[in-house]
Image 1 (cartoon, rainbow, N blue to C red):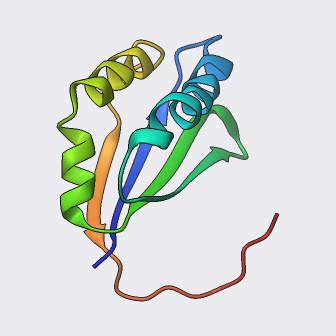
Image 2: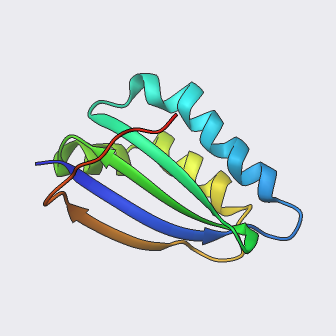
Length: 104
């Protein structure tokens, strides 16, 4: 069963691009070696460019937890965290239903 993590975060003033760059870095450096990764979506608030929501999907809770417990992931997260005003708010769950079209 697919696992999804949704998290809300806010960049420190002037560090918005650094937050976005951290996800580019994850895709370049971590994604090729992370098993079970399905997708990542980063969403910026229309009313506050420093506020983001992100959705990450893994093919199972086990592959998500393996990635979460990897020291390389921990190091990446600590670097991301240095650009945020506080820890993200997290929601972890399983996919019950999914539908729609992918918009480029």
